[in-house]
Image: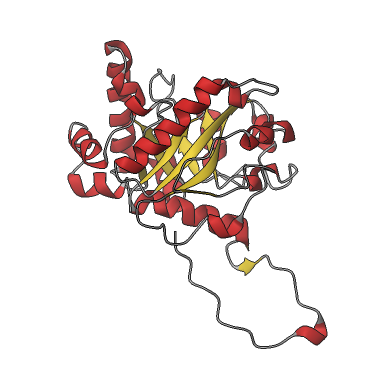
Length: 292
């Protein structure tokens, strides 16, 4: 199975009260269709928010247009999550559509809005990513300051202003976090492409290809590439074809497993389930195996 965990919603979707045009939504629908045509099985629509997450940010999910053959992880009328639609086998010629949050963190207080103690709003998303804007905030994310994070997503088209070192990167990988490389900036102007190569090479070097996730960051169908084209792109970064394929398959699947575990267990050990009434205790069927 192939995954693209970053189909970018318009910037307006990340602003409180922002208005997204019908043309923008049409492009998103076309991008979903193009991803399915390229053979992707699971994608995530990515809502990027600067600052604090609020309940108003969730309203945008009631406006997402439907695509034939797509299985959505939320009710597009009410915006409520549908847990049974987040996992399982994808029908032939179908595609699973998840919802993702990327929080751009420029102040530590922003991260509190996605913590489990911050109101639980982050639990409405299938994937939670953070984009720290400084080394201090990156170390805070890696250190578990915000306990709902699944993915580290740095700005691939801009100069970071700090170095990501091997030790904290290894700590992040050991904690189950993944690092994302979105290739969309590589398709733009030469200056941005050059910066992308530098940033992407840095991530490949510090992770050695482990816990690495390829994504498009596409907001229109022309920005998305087939999985096999991306494998070739990885070779330009000295990433061998096996690791490049894993960055499109088993590594993003591990991100979803991390998110599933985070959402459904307490400290990754105790399942968070409502206890049955004393007189209703009985031996039930074995739990279903998770398929992501």
